[in-house]
Image 1 (cartoon, each protein chain N blue to C red):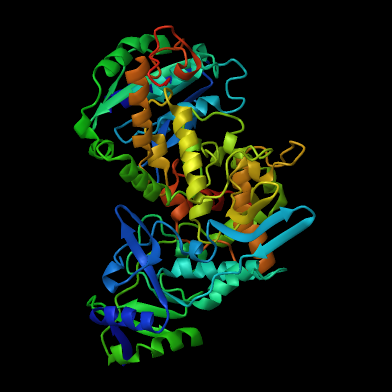
Image 2: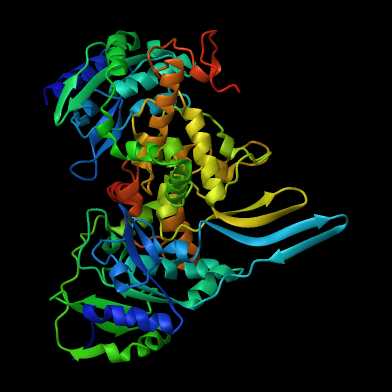
Length: 337
Length: 276
């Protein structure tokens, strides 16, 4: 016997969570576009999509965030900090790759400086993940040694039932247990079998790719130029990525008053590495694409022992010129290191 | 298939006899209906070229890749009529020497692909004139019609909602053949003319800058619209701007390689209705 959450009870759960002080968030489709957004009712969720167009990252690391306000009057400089927003959130229907993305970025944001904005939101959020029973041509979690039911980063894992009437509940953390205690009366014991997981074929052998990337001789390989010739240098892969985390600090305003903001930035942009002198150490798009791949599969794991990719496939799915991590690593896996 | 074979053989011939150093075309993509840009530099690689109705992207922006044409060698490129018009503008704006470009012109109706006759920019003027004279039916873009019926407040609300999704990835800029500036005004940070933040103001600033810079230059290829990862209907803004310059100045972007840029030229008979 397993604990089951039946879909027809989901709206009761949403209401209960809301009255327990949670803001309830989940995958929502508006017109042709989907993202994780706040809902009022369970019927607002779109749980049928493979995954939302936009990743979960932005709920923890928004594209623009005010950090402080400054005013300068005569001799006095006043600053007022914007404290990280607080408030309990329950994010329902997260995809395992998106949840895993959070756990990948945790060590980064807590490394030499603990990013209060990230961790405030992490501590305030309950991640209720639904394992995937379907995938598309771009999903690549299994190539990253993850799976359609990976639990990394999740507080609760729900496994869809074969009869499509609800989910088996697996409580993974105390935070998850606590949130599900509030809806205990809507859960039932049952023996309904779980639906089979999505079959996500392995697209490349990751170890072979990593070995090639770690070989210093390949840094200057002609491969980088060939693979990225059609890259147009937009930042959509990095901005849709659930783990890309680079940001820029900008002061908006004038000499006397303004706001300091933390804005997404992207290694795809030439400006990202432009020096004040005008020199750019990554002067070509191929050097920038190489950086992105190296960072994800060589430098980041070298520092934090985890790849900076959870296999959601958004980079390939949305690329205007049909590039992406999959194609690059597929090709690398066929090269001799 | 016939058109594809025709152009494949032509690509092979031109590469083999050294008439061109590269053919920019399309190859199969990661799904059945996706096509990706392909840069063919040898006879053998030409077999990877595909041409069908899914070959939609306007590839002309690749022609201004830094250093590509600086050796004065020639390059062949697959272009639809809009692509030929944007090539004309690039030439008119002195971004390339059009004599270096061999056009593999094509168009499609439904799934049928046909080749366009001619291979040099100047040979397509009749075709472009006929496109100017036969604009698409208004019903082909119902959303544009709907927006034009709105009052200014409703229109503002519509675009505010659309731009709220903008993440400033600049895919619209990078995919646009007309956005060739080495340093875009939004990347200029001394001073920072345009906010980098993608909040409401920053998103409006960017999209308005983009709209004005493309007025009279956009050929409606749709690269921006298709590349937008958050599905903002960018083509509608450009279509509106194109309609404005056509109505006010009888300017249809990309007519020829010598066409004067509408916002950088002056004629005595220009309409001055905007002067109070």
